[in-house]
Image (cartoon, rainbow, N blue to C red; front, side, top):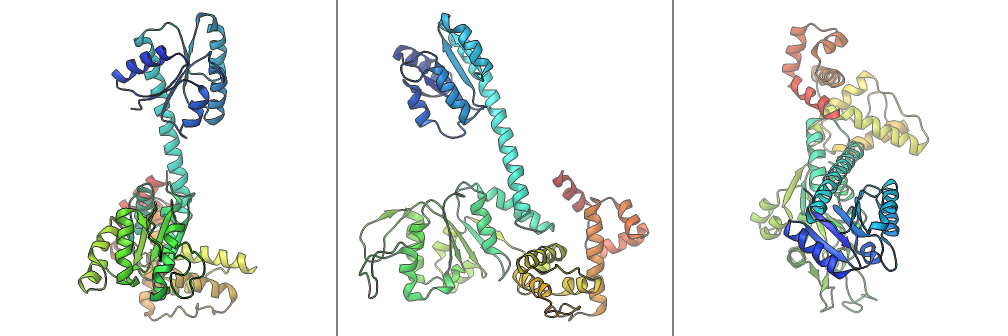
Length: 448
C-alpha cells in the first residue's frame, strides 16, 4: 500500500498539524509552504497524493493543480478550501482534482479521503507497470529472437535482471550473442538513457589497458598528450560491458575490483579520486572460478562480477530457432543489400537444421548474408551436410512437428490433422524427438 503524501500550505500551523496527524497514522509526509517548491521537488511517477491549499501567495492551489495535471493526469490532488471556495473547488474536481476538504476538517475526514486517493493511485501505478512490462516483453521478443525453451527462459531472466542494480556475468560460446544480451540488460533497465560502453578485453594491448580503462592525465607516460577520460569514467551513470574478461591482465583486475568495491577510480598519473556510478556486465567463455584456480584470474573479482549469471545456450541446443533466425537475418541482409530474400527449400532447411553451428548465431547470420548474395548454391555451401541422410531427415522431421505443436498450442488433434499422422505415430515421433505437449501449452498461455 502506498503511503506518501505531499502537503502544500502557506500557513505553518496547518502544515504542522496535518504533518503530525499523518505521521502518527503511518504516512510518509513531505511539507512545502509554496506550490513552486512542490513542483521543483516532485519526483517523476510520484507514488502518492498531493494535499494543497487553494489560496496561497504566488502560485495558487488551482494553478498547482493545472501544472500537476500537465505532468500526470492520474496524480490525485486533494484541495483544502475555505467556505467561500467550495464552488471553485467543485469546478476544480471537474478539471481533474480528486477531492476537496472544507476547512476546518477533522483528522478522520482527511484520512478517509487520503486512503481512497492512495488506493486509486496504487491501481494506476500497477496498471502502468503491467503495461510497461508488456511493452518491454514485446520489444525484447523482437530483439532476442527465438521460441525455444532456453530463449524464453533467457528473456524472462533479462527482464528481471534489467531492473536490479547488480553486476551480471554472461557465459556463452563465441558468437552466441553475449553483447546483445548485455545491451538488453542496459536498454530495458533504469540506466537506459545513460552510456553503454562495450570493451573487448582481449583486443587491448596489455601496456595500454590501464589508460584505456581508467584514463590518464597529460604526461602520465611517454606519448600521453593531454588528459584522456577512460572507459569507466565515460560510462558514469550507465553500464560497462567487459567482453572476454578472462583476458584482463591481473594487475588491472586488482584496480577494477577496487572500483567495484569503492565506486571510485583514479586516472593514470593522478592522485585525485573520482566517484563513479557503474553497472558492470562481464562476459566470458570459460568458468572464471576455474580460471582463478589456475592462477589466471582473481577469485575475489570473479565473485564480485558473478552476483547474477546468465548462460546462453549454443545454437545447436536450440535448433528450433534456426529457421526463424535465418529468415530474420536474410530479410535484414536483403534490405541492406537491395536484394530479394531467398526462399529456402526443404533440402536447404534440412542442411541448416543438421549443422552444428560452432560459430553460433554469428555464423548463421553470415550464412544468411552469403545466401542473399548468391554466394552459396542450393545446398547452402559453407553449411556442410556432414551428417547422414537419415540424421538430416530426423532433424527436419523434428522441426516440422515442433512448429506444428507451437502453431496449434499443443492441440494434438490439430497437429494430427495438419501433418496427417495417426495418434500413435505422432506420439512415437514426439517421444523420439523429446517433444512434450505440455511445453507448448505453456507457450500458448504465455502469449495470451
